[in-house]
Length: 360
Image: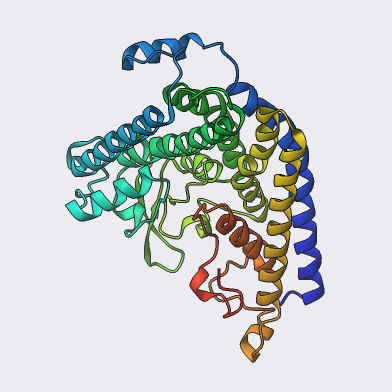
């Protein structure tokens, strides 16, 4: 049992660490985001992509054309994710798993394309590596890029007062993916692998335990998907237990890093907003409001869980049902509050096991 005073100390230390690091990083990242979406220069690879899809990277779109582009792109994404699932039996690295049913495939396709990432199945026993990588992980990038693009278009609506255009969706989508999400995800995946998150194509390993029983250990390209899952505020887990699974989130250190990832872009966007509208005071005001909501939510949720009444919660050092011992109440509630406020959907504890006052 961890003493209540110690838990409060751990809670405060983790909150302070996150606040300091986010405060330092949001300035350069926010400035980078603003530059990405305001520069007129295109990368050579970006120009090649525009030629392939028949888009003019230098053309501006009205809000109605921008909206139609978002809808068409999303509908095509839903179709592709659906088809990949229905063809799973014939795809490489299917792990001998059958194809999901029509209803489940459609549900999953819509969920991942809309950045909802709600899963009504056990991922590690339902989807093979090709579907996980080519369909779901790709949509983790694209749905997040679409969300950023729409947010940037809204900002332009505030700042472009003398024009009827709000940018170009295909340019925003491409730049958000290649210049922001992809490089950050590569770095994040390397850090996660160094922290113990697995990254392989090993399939299911059948072993005999020390007691003579048999067990099946799943593998998978987890770190790469975990990185964009948190960074893009997606939430869909590679395993059924999501970020409570030790292969996705092995330790208190990786847990804190994953919280940092899911807060990184949301807390950097106010800086980008201020730069793009030409008034940094507005960006600071938005950031301060977000910070207050985040702090109050964390404190209230932690208080509700650590002060849970009853013999069992007190003997366990608080309401530990549904929470991992390697995280404790402090790290579990910070993750829960952060993922809920950012609408990420990733979990490192089971929310339905929280107390009546603490349940998100």
